[in-house]
Amino acid sequence: MKKLPKVVIVGLPNVGKSTLFNRLLGEKKALVHSLPGMTRDILISLCSRYEKPFLLVDTGGLFGVEDEPLSAAIRDKAWEAARGADLVLFMADGRRDLAPAEEEIFGSLLKLGKPLFAVINKIDTESQEAAAGDFYRLGAQKLFLVSAEHKRNLDELVRGIMEVVPASPLATGEQRPLRIAIIGRINVGKSSLINRLCGEERLIVSDMPGTTRDSTDTLILRNGKAFILVDTAGIRKLSHARDKREEAGIINARKNIPAADVLCQVFEAPEFPTRQDAAIAYIAAESGKPLVLALNKWDILRTEEDPSAFLRECLFRRLAFVSYAPLLFVSALSGKGIVKILDEAEKVYLGGTKKIGTAKLNEFLETVLKTRPPLARDKTRPKIKYMIQQGILPPTFVLFGHSRARLFPAYEKWFVQALRERFDLRGTPIRVFVREG
Image (cartoon, rainbow, N blue to C red; front, side):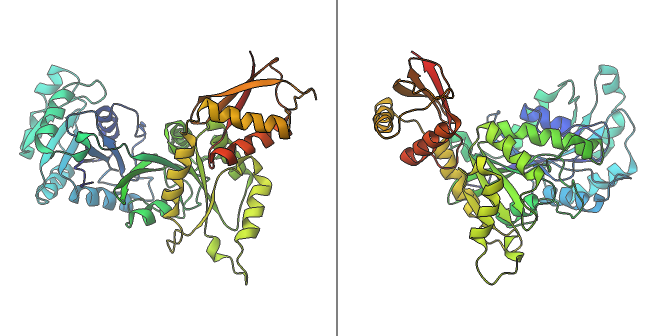
């Protein structure tokens, strides 16, 4: 697949970059907050709702925020994104005068030699539009007076973008990228893993807890296949968040789980599995999404023998309810094993979307009824006549019998495992229900 064109949004903090990002995408992807400095990492998302698909990039503010300890890193990432853009959208707040700093930034952007639009935001009325003449001093190739919040003049901006960005191969119906959400508690190395997979420092990494706030999309290509890696904020109790910005990030991370195709939960050795690891694993299992487990930093354990068997036993003794998921031993520092995350994500997604014919299911059921008849919660032996597959993601099966009695938990666990092995449903939760009929 050829490189997709990039449209990068830059500007000072709190001018509405994330609001415009969400409007152009047609979904609430970037976090929007009244506090300046909400966005830290660059956010990249595939915008395919227009005639020419492109990568839309949201950036942090080009000037620092007073209480933001990572201002320098945020600013560097924004400039790096602008240098790699096919089109730069420079945003300013139309409710105030053009700031000298904005003129300086715009002049520096012109020197990059990239197509450059000036997008003056928060222009909600015609009277505000008439008062925005100060911004024409920028001498932009094109200047758009818009209101991202109220969708004013956004169609005109989209037409301008379509005139500049090159055609994309995705416009011809290329396969949709597999969306993998990287989840876990704070500081287990989620951003570092994604940076290693990208082969570049695309995400900000810091020892400071709660560095990642937005759920950041990163598109990568491997062997002609596209993957979107979603770096999420560390999930923990809202009462433990350091500020309102981190609270918003935690809430957004939880929302990204249902939107993913596959979940990859990252653990950190030797501190695992913690109570918070278990809580996140439970959320993943309940979501019904295919799951991959990745144990990071395991190679720092100094042992004479291979510790993988011991570590596997430690994990699944505590988290037996996700024992269906493959466990990978990875190192963000050395890069060891991380490519397997993509390989396993493909496999478990195929398992989660597999459709099994009714005839094959009932052949399986016939064998089960002979070797190990069903046991209900009331310790009776329900008579099961046949079974069907009702859905996918997760694979869901319905057993029809003479009553609606639920299966005994131990028997249900055995039955699910037998289903998993027979039809290669590794890495995905399985749901089984009993219906009368």
